[in-house]
Image (cartoon, rainbow, N blue to C red; front, side):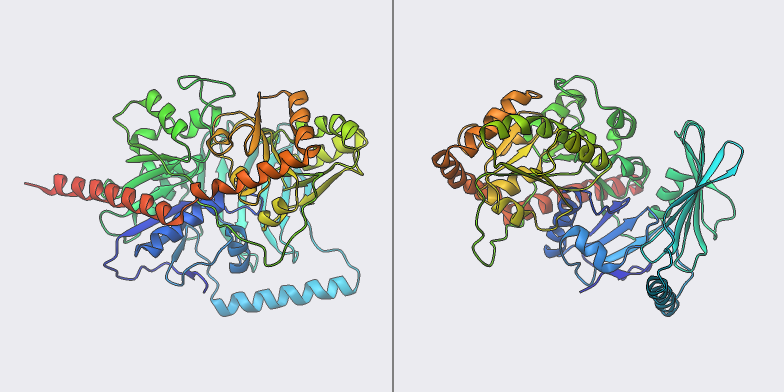
Length: 493
C-alpha cells in the first residue's frame, strides 16, 4: 500500500500522533528506520498517524519506502509545508515528458543537466541542482568567498517555484515564503503556524526526532503533547554527564528542552546523564530501538577474514582510524579484506587515503546498502570507530547476524549490547594499535570467532518488537493525557 499524500484530515475517534520530519536521506543511517519503527508501532496499536514534512524535497513513493525500509499503511496522512499547484494528471504528464527527453538525450549521447555552479554577479555565485532526469529541483545564491548561502528556491516538477528561503549573513535566522504567501515569514514560526493549523484533536502526540525540528515543535499548542526523541550524543567527546554540550545540541536542543513533555533516548545511560543535567522535573525515558531481524533464505558463507563497517561516511564516524589500522592487520593477516558500506561527505577523502596508503586491493567502498543483514552475515568481524553515538544501531544488527563487533568504548551504545570478550571487544577510545590487535585476535582465532558468533546471536533477548510497541504506546498515552489535562485546566471556570 502507498501513503496518502493529501492535506485534508479524515475524522477519526482514534488517538492521533503527528511525526514532524525534515528530510529523508538515502544515506541517513538508522535514523529513518528507527523513526519508521515507532510510527508503525503506534499505527498497529490503533493510532491515527500523520506526518508533517517541513522540507521541500519531492519524494517518489518507492524512493521514500526504500529509505525507510518498509511499507506505509494506506491510512497514513502525509502533509507537506509546500503545496504543488499541479494535479496528479499534470505530474504524470510532466514525468512522462521528462523521461522521454532523458531517453532521447541518452540515445543522442547528449549531456544530461547536472548540478552546476556559475557566477551571478561580483562576489556572488549561483548553483542549480537537478534530479536524475535533468529537471531543475532547486537553485541557490551564495557568497563566492565564504560560501555562505544567501537565498535558496525550490521548484515543482514543471519548473514552477514552490518555496523560497532567505538566510541572514550569520546563518542564524532564515525567512521563508511560498507563492501563496503575501510576504515572507521567519522560518521556524511559519512552520509552527502551519502545523498548528492542522485539524488534529486535543491530546495529539507530536514527535520531534532531530535538532532540525525541536524549535518548531516547541512552538506548537499546549493542547498537544510533545515528545523529543534524541538520536544524537548530546555531549562533546569524553565529557562527563555535566560536561559541555556539542554545538548542535547547545544551539538546537538546550533552548527548547523545557517545552518537551518527554525526552526519549535509546540508552538508559544517556537518559540518566540528561536527568543529572536538567533535573528530575523533566520526563526522561530510554526505549531501545527494535531491529527487523531477517534470516537469509539460503545459507550464506562467512568469510572469516572479511572486516566490514556499515555507517555514514562522515567525520564523526572516524573511518580513517580503521584505514590506519589496516596495514597493521594485513601484516599478520595478509588476505584480510575490508568492505566499507555507506555514503557521505567524507567519501572522497577516505578513498584518497586508501589510495595513498596502497590499500586499493584490500579495501572496497561498496556504497549504500538496504540489506545490512547480508553484509554482516558474510563477515568475520565488524567495526565501529565513531567519536560518539547515541546507540549504534549497526552494532546490534551485526550481533544478530552472528558477526562479532570490535568497537571503541564510547558514550553511548556499544557497551549496552557488547559484552567485552564474549560477543565482541571493547577497546579504549582512539587507540588504533588496540583496534588492530583486537581485530587480529578475532580473525586469527577460529575458535574465538565461532564462540563470539554464537554468543552474539543471543542479543535476540534485547530485540523484542512487542515490548517496544508496549513501551511507546504507554508513553504516548501518558503524554496525551498530560496534554488533555492542560486543556481542561485552561477551560475550567
